[in-house]
Length: 347
Image (cartoon, rainbow, N blue to C red; front, side):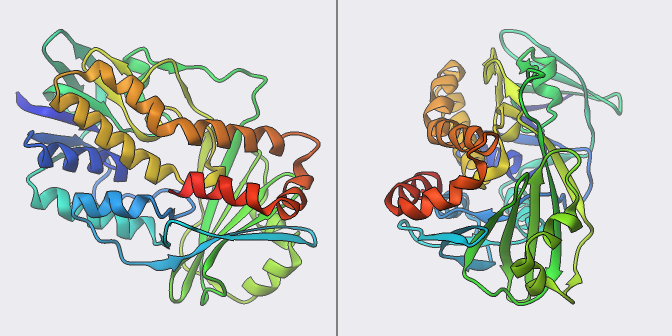
């Protein structure tokens, strides 16, 4: 049986960050991921300023397009704020994945192409029984397997979303066109938001967030200014989706199992700082493991995710209320408050 001090389920960016953190702490690390090669995901692809130092700490220097702030638009209203904590970066998720994987391999992380079937744990170990029939043991297990986490369900940490709570979904596609702005642009329609993220000198990512029935093309067509900019631009990726949001967990730790990233619970993609948050959670989880006190991670998770949970939930509440189309006009009337929220989420 293969054994590791830290066993990670999920080979996305946050799972690889956790494994890298483990190796930097002198712990052996293995990643179980069923998808071979580069793993993509439908997301906004904007790295907030606070995410870049976390990547540098891991020994990863991303290459992409500088992002200096955020612009929100709705009807004839707009409000723009420059990040006060430095520039962020837009880059294809595939490029980020490859950079993290190369660093993980360099540090000796073992990648196992398989998937979790059952999870067994005791006071000293966690054992994953895989689809292949193999069993893999870890002193600790980190669940980084995304929105529909099998780890959270099998560990008894998953919590059902109430039927009364609005569920939202994301759709993303890239277009071959030179970015027209250094800002992330967010367009509000009556039922959805559209995120425009420059990811290269000749490419932008377009992400639409809204209810299940949201039509990608119709949403873009409802924004004449944006539709005119994208007119004639060739798609440079397949259209892909993600969701539903939110995903809830009752707790983030149980014995020797710790949850990070989307697997630990996710409110909504509306504020775009999921990776920054996930990297911070991965670091906190490994620090608690290295101390031999995994139970401390619950408090650490709450500390690093506090702003995200409070501010994002506030925005979601507004977005699902009759005040939805007043969000951008209100932000333009109170730019200091808007700037405060942007900076708290971006740092």
